[in-house]
Every structure is written in C-alpha cells, then in structure tokens.
Length: 340
Image (cartoon, rainbow, N blue to C red; front, side, top):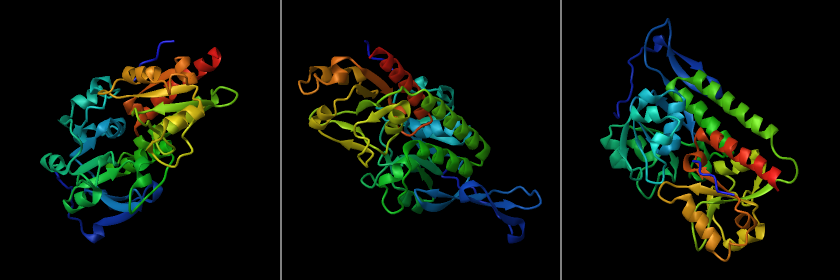
C-alpha cells in the first residue's frame, strides 16, 4: 500500500464619560464596556489568557505566528484585522491552505522564529501564538514583555498546559473551541465563533459515530528524531485526532505535549499504524524510509505492513484544520479495519 500524502501597535482607545458607559456581559464571563443610547465608541473586553484575565481593545494590526494562528483568524472572518504572518520553513506553503486567498491579503513578515524586534517593526497591536511555539522566554518574547510595550497578545489555550504562572489545561480540541470563543469576544464576532464551534463539534460527533468496532487500533505518531523519537503525548491535537477516529495513541497516557521517548518503548507498544508528521523542510518520505531501514523499527507491525498515514503539519498544531485531520485519519482507519 502506498503511503497517503496529505497534507500599530495602534491601540484603540475611546474618551467616554462614565455616564455613557455600561458594563454588559457576554458568554464565558467576558465583561464589555458598551455605550448607552446607541452612541458609537470603542469597547474593551476582559478575556482569559491562559488563566489570566486580560483586558483587550479590538486589535487592528495583528501579527500571527504559524498557520494555526492565521487559520483561526481567517476562519473567524478577521482577515482585515491581520497585518501579517510569520511562517517558519516547517509550515506548508500557504497556497495549499483552505484560506490561501486570505493569506494573499496580508503581509508575509518573516520565515524566522517569532521575535520582539519583528513585532515592534511591524507596529503590531496584537500577537497570536502558542507558548514555546512562538512565545519564548529564551528569545525574549513573552506576553509579559509585550504588555510592557503596549502590545496585546493571546496564546493558544492548548499550549497553556506548561505555561508558567497562569496555567490552564484543556483537551486539545476543547482548546481549539476555547480559542475561537475567546478570539470571537476579543474581536466582537461572537456569533461567528459560536457557529464555527457548533460546526466543528458536529463534524467530530459524526466521526465518532463511524468509529470501527472492536479494540482501538494502536497508533504511533512519528514527529522526528533518529537516536530517540519525538512524538505526540496527551496534550496536543494528534492525541484527540487518534482517539476520536477510533485509535489509541501509544503515548496518550503521557501528561505532556510533544515529548521525547525511546525506540524500545515504541517497539514494546507494537503500533499497528504510524502517523508521519509532514514538515515542509523534512518530508514524510524521508521519515518513512528511516523507519523501514532502521533495524529497530523495521519489524514493527505498521512498518512491515506499510501502514503509514501522513498528517499535514497544520492539521497537527492547534488549528481549525485539526478537524480536517481528524476526518482524513478516521477515513484511513475505517479502510484499515476493512483490510485487516
């Protein structure tokens, strides 16, 4: 069987008298200052950022890091609020994205890692990224640092698992829904967010209704690594993709996000299917060839039977495309069950 290749700093402020402002509540405890008597004015909303209540004004020059951040904004219809995107080489070409037309409307800022200088030079008023996948203590770009510069920020809820200070924990797909809900509040598109979340939940439920009968199929996700493999643990989207599709992640009991393990542990688990995470700068075919030629992995059931499934990078990081990844992998597992 042939492996399947898938794949201004302008803060908005308002001068409003206390008599002209009333506090109203929106979903999930958000507090919005809204003008009375239909007066036109800017508003603020308080939304959690990894457990920390943060007051936001509606951003106008957002910088987004990686495809997952951009896709959340585009899916919510917020293209006009995005100034530009940062896309390291691992990300697939944007012309392969369902939102390729939206990418064309915003500026490509860099193929480097996210950094403070880039954000400041872009005159950004908002940055969307994940913790340790964008924001970083080591590189000197954190929400706290951006706060001191007057630049708003938001982190993917899925990445809050190991964010110090104000941690939150969500299952990965619930993290996606949480982000859409909170971004909807920040940008005032709550209805659109609600519609998207309902659609995604329905699509997941449809997949679950079609899961193969019998014991869950043992699945190993191979990210990268030769001496030791890097893989998906409990707190990242592929774990939910695997379990909703009817499989079991052989490292799904590890309370971590992406994690390093040993080849001995992989061999002991005897995975029946291997998901290959496809990077633009590290093609899936090279990873498959390594697994086939490495004596330690060559006898794994999935390798012997050529049962590889290629997962697009943007389907594996927190993104609306997680749902596409789920549907694609679920179809593969149904076919696999019929074949065995």
